[in-house]
Image (tube, rainbow, N blue to C red; front, top):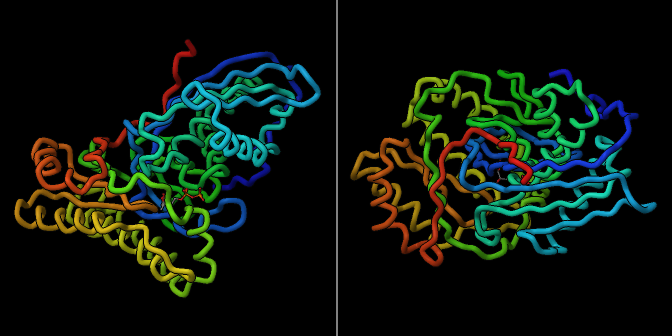
Length: 361
Ligand code: DP6
């Protein structure tokens, strides 16, 4: 796609008034993983993810022309001040200043909440940054009546990416790609709805998130990405990510569940193999992560029910399966897996249709 950073600098000279907007934006789970970046949050390989539904962030934004000389920012998490989370939003707002020049003229109140426990180990950056980016685009929309829906979401993805790479994939429903790839129109600057045919089975896929460890991660994603810089397997990894994205194409088109399982589990284990072979090396899986994986494999062999797993940068396991097996898999989770989850907690989610504008009231 022939767009550059400059394409996202708005031509703005309008007058500002006050306004309000609220957005619900989902988390996503990568099937081909983004691990390794350069420049301003640009990916070293293309990735593709399922957009989720139930794991989401709801953010409301209130803006008005600044009352003093400096613009005032207020951040509330679940209705209360939260300096740590606020800092993340404020530093994001600083980083995107060139693309939202009107922000320096505005006072802003950001009020946000997640549907999932924020210490659950589920990355809230994808849903959080995309919800905030959408709110900021609502401000831009109020200043530019010519902004099309496509441009709105494309720039929201562009902004969200600067906040957190994986957040760029939360702006569309279903399957979303981020990063250039020879077989597609994808861009490194923003996510795009997966452009090739997708079989119905993948439109309602289930993701039960098994919460193995709710603790703080020992190694942040940003540090993990950085360790790919001098990683001995980095170049091979980037090539394989591209190949896996190509291999997914007939799998998605034909509803090939066995093919899906093969690629998705290989990607998950490759991500963690990269962590284990970084310098310094680290392990984010816990004993219960491995115990769950073994149970999933045993159950798949015995029952022929096509459950599979993926992992993100943490110990939790995402149990993926076609919706038709929901009842049986739920029994499996309750009888065999829940004992490995911290406080017996898991979240039932599924492929969703993307962000939603909320009523302001
Ligand atoms: C393992 O998007 O959290 O979940 O860009 O530094 O914010 P930053 O990293 P982040 O990395 C996500 C990595 C991953 C794989 C993925 O979602 O593709």
